Image 1 (cartoon, helix red, strand yellow):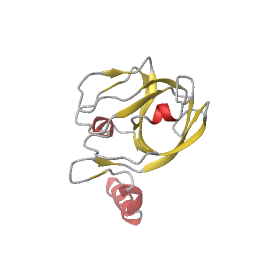
Image 2 (image 1 turned 90 degrees about the vertical axis):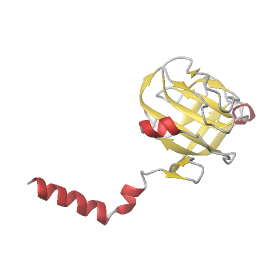
Image 3 (image 1 turned 90 degrees about the horizontal axis):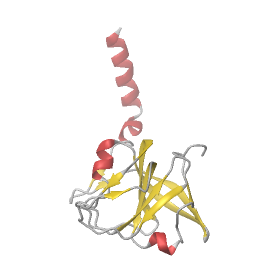
Image 4 (image 1 turned 30 degrees about the horizontal axis):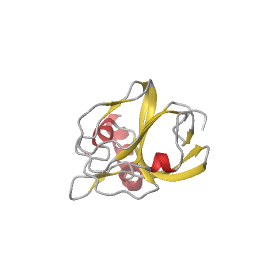
Length: 161
């Protein structure tokens, strides 16, 4: 019976290679990881702002993040989905770009923002309390859109969205 199950799984994988390949990150020559991007929106007192966010939802993706990335479009970012609500710590080791880090609760409410993090720093950047997501944006974007604690982030990974 195990052979039949394995053959069925193999057939499904061969019949739909895009399903398997879509989940795999790609890496450029410098070692920067690139993941599939999805739409998300940030709602602030200044309006609703749409972004393309690469979704990092696996431990290896969390560890790599935006390391070695030399550039990123203005309306682009990386959303770290942790799958549980807890204290999160980040750092900027091997990260070339200065970033704004947005700490987000499970319902999409912004718990805090750390602006203009220092490239290559190994200092720990801790969430202001338990969160389930972190959104990394280019440095200066948070200020540009008026992002602050209590604002909302809209994406399918948040409860009720």
